[in-house]
Length: 452
Image (cartoon, rainbow, N blue to C red):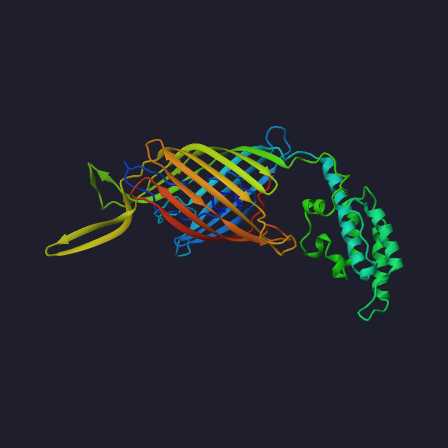
């Protein structure tokens, strides 16, 4: 998602962040070298991190592709790194590392960063014991499914804190007392036999059973979709740990050393931006329209980021200092006269070589994922971000941008593919730039905006 990790983000989004990383093509920023204002699009802002994945943004000016990768390192001081880039293709569909034709140059941006997250650490006890709880909760789901096959008068209610082993014993008694019946009210021996098989398999689940026990038992359920739906490889949306806690309060006496719901992440980035634009030189105050030159420069910016996480909410702040440039491309014409005849050749270019300026940049992002608009068992999940970025050159003036990407993704494999829309508002103190509104549509594979 734009400047984030949707979308990835991101955030962003992402880190979507976001998310969270689609980029809308901002309007041309310019004015002459003495003008005020700046171009927020020249900052590869990502206050919620990058994550791993790629997105595609299609706007009225062309196509933007963003990709990034992040990896963890179990190191006491620095425990993750990330690399990302963004490039464009023009309206003719020609792929470009950077665009010399786009008025809102630049078009190639990169970000390289290192940081530390409170969430990234060895948690062997938590990993093992939380896996035991997930097996217990899954077992209870399967026991409840057996209970659903019994006639209404024979169905029982098992206390939510009852362990898998005890729940199986109680359900076996209920199955024996009131066996399943078919639509005609006659004993359904086939269903009864399968129920007995299920309960016999679940009876092998112990308090310290690991996830492989669940996988092995699930293999015997493949021919029965009602029971197989609770298995990881069924393709059906699976309950999260939070959902299981809600369904079985008091059952989780297994998990130990669980991480806090509140986590943090802090990191720094180098964000180079490759800028290119055609221009005509100015000699002694007069534009030399006959010389066609091209200006290319790598602009450098350093930024620091802080991200905070609490359940479905993610908040990030970024601040930095670096170079930005104002670009104004206009219709430049060269007129050749011969007698009473004249010929004119025109092209888009900037008059005078662009002059980079140092600027302060900042960005803030808030992500909610998932949004509570779909049911817990729905096939789709959704998320949204609000990303505000601000750029202020040391020479004066400022510009700002507010982007609100909204995306949907499959619940079963959340963020493996996202589809979304992003309205964007831009404001600039330079009257030659002014304000604008645009909408970008993005699609692609993005990771969730996780803490790691």
